[in-house]
Length: 146
Length: 146
Image (cartoon, rainbow over all chains, first blue to last red; front, side):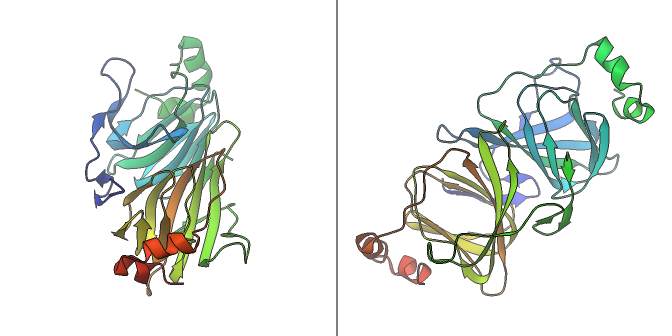
């Protein structure tokens, strides 16, 4: 299949919509995952995630980096110790071992393309000491609320 | 720089706009190139190409594959022996050693994201025998006109 037509914002013919992660494996809320390209000839995997209004991805970090482009909607992200408002086509670079989380606004979904190396490590969740450190900044404390 | 804001369709703050290829190195017309993500930690390079109205990319093939998403505009592509009409968010998979070319329509630019392995071979241009083979299909002959 050379071409998969878009069938709507963040939807493609022949691309399955999955749960973001296994329920109970990590804290998240209303996120879906689609794999757009994953091929033995490609050293990367190209995915699309969609966070429903009011939802959020897991707060996590890992050795591999993320290259992200917002595709639809509005939201915010935490990258390290900074919060950023996000709109379509904005680019987000998440360096190795950097805490990060995405949130949709209350009235808009947030859909984004996310590129990762095909071979990569598993994400780490924050421990109590990590959370205490992050919460020293009140804006971040409010953002990473669960 | 964690976030690069989009400054318009197919434009980003802090991302330079380059010539697609060195003039005279290969046949193409009115194409620009931007590198959105290129990082030692990433096994891939994420680029954005924009073909101006009436323009076209080089007809070429290579061992590495392309993973493409149309971002703005309208156009068509040749992949192997098939032509496809393209609209925003359509996905195009170009397998190894497959002839391919992108064309914008006469009245619209065609902007697309293109993912490649960071380590990859150089493209090959068609020889006379390749062109003769491609031109056996009249629709393809019309499409690859220079």
